Amino acid sequence: MEWWKDIYGALKAADIKQVVFVPDAGHAKLIDACIADNDIRTVPLASEEEGIAMLAGAWLGGQRGVLLMQSSGVGNCINMIGLMRTCRFPLAAFVTMRGQWHEFNPWQMPMGQGTEPVLEAMDVLVDTVDDPADVARQSEAVLHRAFIGMQAGALLLHQRLMPVKTFGD
Amino acid sequence: MTDSSRADSFPLHRRDIAKQIFDSGGENLLIVTGLGSTNWDFTAAGDCERIFPLWGAMGGAIPLGLGLAMARPEKRVLVATGDADTLMGLGSLTTVAVQMPDNLTITVFDNERYGETGMQATATAHNADIAAIAAASGIPVTGTIRDQEEMDTALPEVLEGRGPAVFVIKVRAEKLPFVLPPKDGAYLKDRFRIALLGDTGIV
Image (cartoon, rainbow over all chains, first blue to last red; front, side):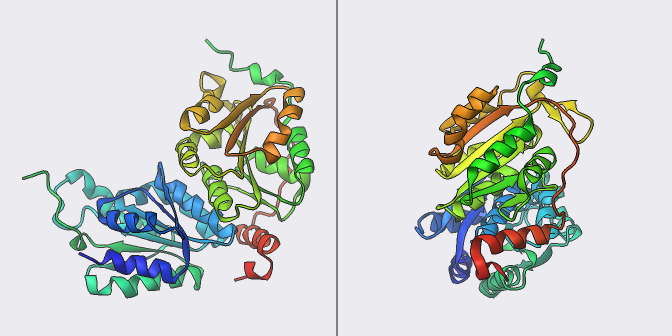
């Protein structure tokens, strides 16, 4: 499960300076790598919607940033995504999915299943990756589409990429 | 029991305070306003490309200012927003206090009202104290300004003090004529970036 290194490599190649996040177990190693990188500012958020607004501010100041979050956090962002669409700010979000595959917690199902339709309802371009071999080029593509193509996009990291989580049952 | 009509007689007028801050700030000051009244206040003070005035994105002014302040540490960033916008994003005060940007000042124009929707009372008309919440969130410089003398005293700290700082400015609950900036968000973004970044601001 080393695909997180491919995301980190893509962030570095795209000159990402701010990585803002609400932690998720699926992003833990990537977050640690960003924290250890002196050329990246890492920002733990109280709520994911702050991250959307922060990335708008970063872009106003001439920096590129990305948002890392779990699928449940997408629901917290919806109104703030309107800021990105109205002002045509670039957006690159990396979303670790719950509620898709071998999900042990039924409370994760509604937002997990709702993630893609609500993003698309806000005109965010959505891609899903479920094969570790594709993470590198998919990550590069979502970053290119944001900062070169000036679009709002999210890459959903399928739950198949994550270790199966249980509470011991 | 609190007096939720007390803001009707607060001495400070929001447009005067916005004008004082804007005129004193100079070319180095980058301003992010919240949606609603603070947008109209700073547009009245001097609509210009160094202001990014929000027309929506409630709860977003403070984190937007944080992202900007982190990207441009050599500039002073002023967030000017209202009590309702701040209350919607209180968690962002804790986020600011983790990053500790010394170039970020947040001024909360607190009229204790939802100004655009019929002047309904916010939590600050009751028992909420945003300066105390900011201090408890870890913001190192906080204060509440209630009259012109306190505003004059605080102004150098607002514009040049070591941040991050949160100043709550208690302003009269008054409904004022609209003074509106352009509302095309893409234009507002691009004019700000070009003013700040020159040709590299053009994508």
